[in-house]
Image (cartoon, rainbow, N blue to C red; front, side, top):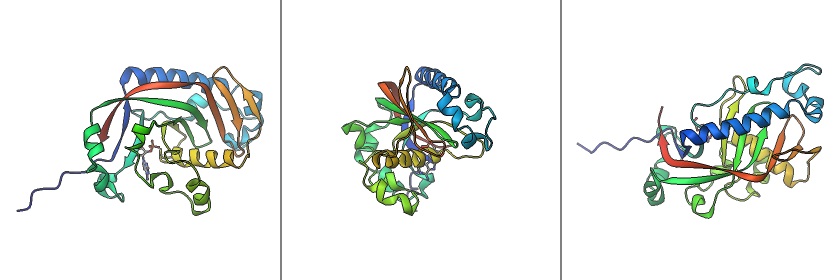
Length: 223
Ligand code: 2AM
């Protein structure tokens, strides 16, 4: 009989250490609390509520994911394209269970998701699968996404609105980055944490003055 193939996980990624998770959740929740009190945000409130004048409590609006992490490769237990090849990469095997520090450089809020943009180092880029940025991207957005630097999709999902899957965070992030590149930024508001910009249709992007770093472990995850 043939030896059984090792099973592939749901995904690989960098997982925040528990104490780091708490710190990041607190810092980012403070931002949400401030955002929904801003006049600039209230002007576009209907993009979140469906009607003007209605208030929204963003802290309640987004559901927290279980473990904060930055996905490198979604394997779907082997059903995703390139999953096996990724799991067999020497750099992946060598990195498992190793510590690493992630750098969060921006926060994004849309009617669907709340997320943190991660800027990868050159070393971390070696764990970023080629072609992963454009996985599941709408054909109309593909040319703009292909023009972005590799790893642009790297992020930590901090919350999803009801009925939305976490995969949406990367897609919304790419859309925002594409709009920024085209110079489509609207209102800008200075906040303690950095500069907040509005990019139409309920999309908000906060460029952090100082990156937020977080200690992580590279690992695989299966439900
Ligand atoms: P996320 O990386 O934006 O949080 C399990 O579902 C994890 O894999 C989640 O963290 C999720 O999104 C990510 N994920 C789910 N489906 C995906 C897909 N098709 N492509 C990339 N990542 C996906």
